[in-house]
Every structure is written in structure tokens, then in C-alpha cells.
Length: 88
Image 1 (spheres, rainbow, N blue to C red):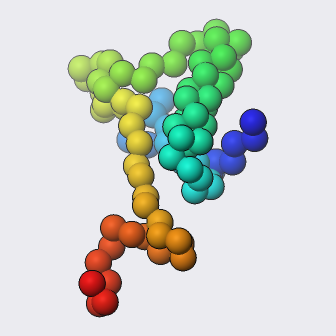
Image 2 (cartoon, rainbow, N blue to C red):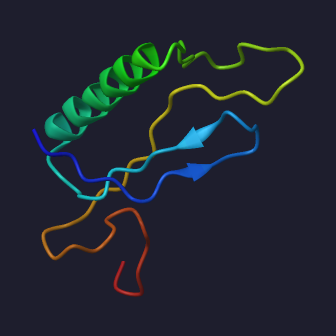
């Protein structure tokens, strides 16, 4: 499976990163892509001698960095269905 992502961004903590899926796809495919990204990260980290953490706050003295999702719901014309418009 080919998964497109936006450029990976560093978050607040030095070892905290955000990975955003580039394509808007069916919710099931999005969930599958997200899980596959987690497995890719685990395998790449293991090969480099690291163990990635997806805990909400694994260290008391550092910012939290739990695995989470932001969702957008588009209507058939590609408009964000959750934003109220003048027609609503």
C-alpha cells in the first residue's frame, strides 16, 4: 500500500513528531493507513536501535505525545461538512 503524508513536523518536545496523511480517503482506509504508519515507525525505529513510544505522557518532565487523530468530514463537493455556512 502506498501512503502519502505531508512533510513530517517536529512538535513541542525534541522527540515528538506530527505525521499527517496527505489524502482524504474512506474512513476505513484512513484507519488502516494510520495503523500501517505506526507499524512502519516501529520497524524503522527497531532497525535503528530505538523503541518508539505512543503513550499519552510517558515522561513526567516532558510534553505529552500520545497517538491521536484529527478528522475532517468533507461533503460530496469536497467542502468541510462541519463548518457552518451562510446557507445553513
